[in-house]
Length: 495
Ligand SMILES: Cc1cc2nc3c(=O)[nH]c(=O)nc-3n(C[C@H](O)[C@H](O)[C@H](O)COP(=O)(O)OP(=O)(O)OC[C@H]3O[C@@H](n4cnc5c(N)ncnc54)[C@H](O)[C@@H]3O)c2cc1C
Ligand code: HEM
Image (cartoon, rainbow, N blue to C red; front, side):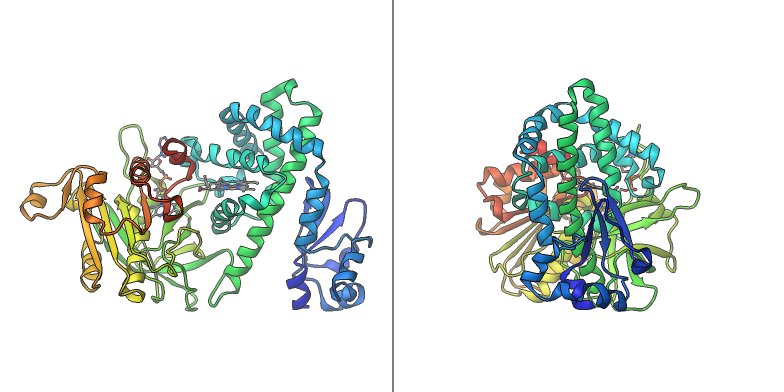
């Protein structure tokens, strides 16, 4: 049975064919209106049913192919990819590619309409989508633009798999499920129709419906693997799990760390330095849950996960941040928080032995501290340059910890750049550079240009560091970054 599940994680049933429901008691299923297939996850089928009807299906290549002719289109993701690729005609592909530029022109209008209609019809999704991103229009662009970008690669989607994986990490950590995809597809298509009016001919809508189905299936498959991985590792789980706040430590005026341990006492799964968790906040008085990501700021292998959160206070016309202020003001030691398993592909390349440069701005130092801690323990010979930009010493979190780790490593240095140092900072000579990072200064503190560069920080900081590294002709393959919001928010301008 396990063998069969591994080999054939899904069953696809063509529309029009029927299944006896008692055979599939307890099976979760999705009616995938975009591909005209019903999709069943093979997890809860009883062994008796399997042996009565399907044992022959896992006997080998020829018989697997033969089963495609059977009343049930029962196939592995491999077969399904082939089938999906075949489903799109040359004409459909041409229609998709020629309409992408048109949709991009109407980008914001379509996506605004899409979210408005979808969230009105499915208010439960307000528990998943970030309301602040919605209000500021950040995520709106990200999702639809990614669909358009994928559509341009519709006949060679394997080329954009790294991008799909990056998004899927976020989706997995948020708990996005296959049944959410048809909802997004339905309202994206409805919004396209709504905004383009008569220009959205039946042919165009039909082509986009098909294309979305193909794209969505790629995401669903990648995410299915990720859920499985998260669940099957030691101490793993696939959704949100209860963690107790063991310790709450103030790190600076604005940043506080939370040490989280699993409430059930299970071991903690390993993670890669640079990864984040999602925290699902149930804030008293709020009608919806709010999910936010927080990078793990300690080394892997500890008995806790540590997150370090910046308090987003209200400023002028901007309201206070919901989750960060809740964590700072209301969450106390002993409280329980809902946390998803570590995710994300912004990770330290531990196999590369070249020097590492870690550059952070503000609270963007959290993944860098985890990387530093991991390198300090595992790579005593690898040169490390840790550069951190903060407003001043009052806002500089985790300084002692970084200095201790750097001091204990023969090849590591740490450099502080303050944009608005206080008098006390000046008296204590607590920083190495005043103002903003610039290339001349970076070149003076980085011993070797040939290195791996990792950076993270606020939007303007991301643009500026990216620009400096490009100016220094650092190859794209050596530049890695994380942004604490939808990446597209700063990338478009920087590139
Ligand atoms: C991969 C990843 C890792 C992260 N790691 C960390 C980390 O280690 N530490 C950390 O502190 N954060 C981290 N973040 C950011 C974190 O997820 C949250 O975005 C952050 O804590 C703010 O959430 P919030 O609920 O407090 O604010 P939100 O309520 O989400 O508000 C965010 C901002 O939008 C503004 N805003 C809200 N509504 C409006 C409106 N109507 N008009 C204008 N402005 C508005 C708020 O003033 C606030 O400044 C990470 C994010 C990602 C994606
Ligand atoms: C093929 C379809 C989809 C594509 C191409 C897509 C693309 C994206 C992209 C590009 C991001 C931003 C990633 C980042 O942070 O950099 C994102 C985030 C997100 N996606 Fe998707 N997505 C798809 C389907 C879905 C579905 C079905 C759901 C659930 C209903 C969903 C919910 C979210 C949420 C909640 C976020 C986090 C950002 C926020 O809360 O504002 N997505 N997606």
